[in-house]
Amino acid sequence: MGQPTVEEFASEVEEWLAEHGNPRDQSADSGDVAWGDGEFSVSVFRNLSHEEEEEADHLEALRAWNQLKVARGYHAITWREEYGGLGLSRAHARAYGRLERRFHVPDSHELFGVTIGLMAPTVRAFGTDEQKHRFIADLLATNIYCCQLFSEPGAGSDLAALGCRAERDGDEWVVNGQKVWSSGAQFADWGLLIARSDVDQPTHTGMTAFLVPFDAPGVEVRPIKQMSD
Image 1 (spheres, helix red, strand yellow):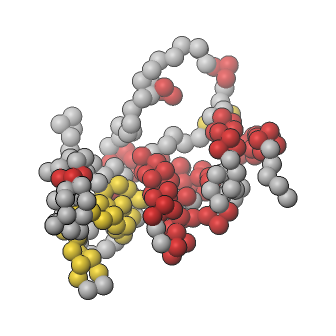
Image 2 (spheres, helix red, strand yellow):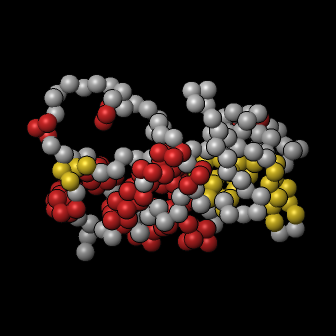
């Protein structure tokens, strides 16, 4: 059986959303667009304290909605079936996005964006077959969360100035260093970490990317306080 057309797919999605979603009240729209407020917020990260994030159960609501979509493959429309996706086109994915915006669904979270939008594509592009089989489906389904471990206290976002070191010890790597601005790290299961693995190479080379389990010995996650509290 061939792929459904975008119109056929959109019809199926509309029926599914009507069954599982909560439609937005279009008549309640005033027509006044206030950039920076409500649905038109332009903030990159959600302005919640650690306690508020835990109490709001925001990530759990997001995960529940994402995993409801998993049963239909709507969470990974353009991904191959072996990763739990549908193997459809970007046009199909855009059609789903347009329809979903008509319904009240949990707002996104930076940890979701990193897990689905960064980690899964990175493993697909650079991982071994074993790593792809182990991680991608679970990342897309958000069975596991991953955060980004790039920036450092002494280097900021300048990867060429990395101080975090990774050294071979037999069949293992030993990583020493510190990362910062790792949004969502307190909820993450894994992190994508960039470390300097060859100090004899020029600054822009000699680096290795690691998938670091947060339950590994020596991993400590600590909050930081900004100037604004």
